[in-house]
Length: 388
Image (cartoon, rainbow, N blue to C red; front, side, top):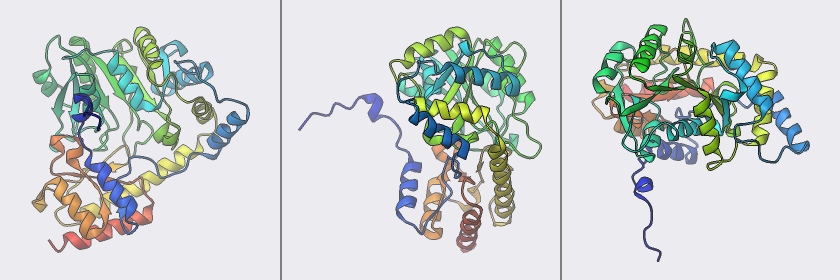
């Protein structure tokens, strides 16, 4: 038998409860899953046709590490026009999803022992990515009574002077559905400049905003172009998660270094996916509007129903496709409550602690699921919790 050679890096990665719950839901067809973090819509038909055409035309080879020029030109135009982020093809890199973009950005900005600010609760991949590089995650608690907005005062208290190189900002937020206000972003921008901290801005859900909310890219604020790496993806906006294509825009020297490292990770984003992404940007945008409208319809129903269930409290999410209800009145941990719903109601949710210790007392509910299934799931939840 081969000796155990698994590295500490690999063996110390956290075990995701979410993965286990989703696996159970997939195996038991009686379970309704409110766990998905991906759109339930198919990719737009014009995007699929473009992918098929590109295969027929022989686009089956490597692309340049930074990405195909025509796609980078389209991305730069989109960022400049829609997000107000100054961009040229030279300061854009196409990646295998925005998750790879985050990892490449971290690899280029931190050395062992250096800190990266993240939010708690926050997307579950941030902390492990930092720890994989032997960096130090600096978790900033988000509080429900503050609307899960980021507190700069709290960051200032926890920052390690001259040892904190970067922060990962996520808006709209996973798992809370929070859209950071312009006031918060301006305060974060001032903090980043004063402390010489690079902002890695994860804007995966940029188009999924509702009600009176407005997404603002922090890289569009005055003087921030040299302090921000803007990350976006085709996965959420265009329902293209399986294509694995995203992009990053930032200071020329960092993007150039990320492109060098790309050769030693995945070489390039898949060429066929890049051709599909080009069509997504340049083709008709009606599918995006229709998906956002349907997400909003589901969101309103979820909030209305959650408010009617005893002992649930849920702040209204203004972005992404998640609700993050407070279930602390039930006297169970987040994990135990998620297990209870899975066992008794046959509904899969995600414990809030998957997103950090300050997620205790919450569960995440995704409305990236068909409207009728969400209604049935909430009916089941209502029935079982009324018996507690």
